[in-house]
Image (cartoon, rainbow, N blue to C red; front, side, top):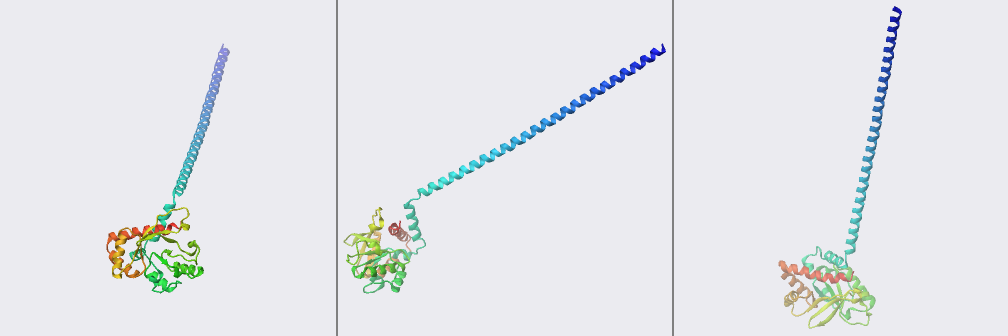
Length: 295
């Protein structure tokens, strides 16, 4: 009987031991599953974070590419606009710039002188001008007139006349109208090869037009400048010039007494803001013609 009880107790202990072992195994299994779940969570979380970072990086790259494309498109647009602006720059725009550049900084004394035409003899006080030297340079510095009118007596030969005009141009600080008011067998028909750049048209009753030689204008047309020839007593020249100019003359052609006429007209204009502004406007019209043959 005692032996049976002892055997029964031993069996109970064995069952409890086995149950404890089974419970430990279950605990290990559950712990392993938990660890595996956590590991899986970490793994998938890592993949998610990696994918998210990759997506963000890709998104940033796309934004940078789009910004670069937009910048390139803007640059193309600006370049196209600049090209259009260049294409829209016309011959008239160039002429305006040339006129402005010639007049800029020109003192009133030189502006008024630029309204006059005269002969080389009247300018330099010689009997018959056949060359241009130091006296021509000094006269043009003191009286920077708008142009010179030559006669047949100033032409001895093609070489001599060409040299005289070349020297005259080089001694003037401003562009000159050079006119041959005569017919001469010493020169061929195209006078532009010698430096002549203007001619008189419709001359009569003291008023006519000064126009650029057709050979210098090409296909362009030009109305020309109204020129009035002024003569008479020296003391009346300045008033006559002022009256002609105020009545629409662009250029004043004075063959004798040019210095008196210029100085008197300058004295009448100086200090009068309205007349000074009119002088500048007249000079702009003159230089539009002077510069037109250079286009």
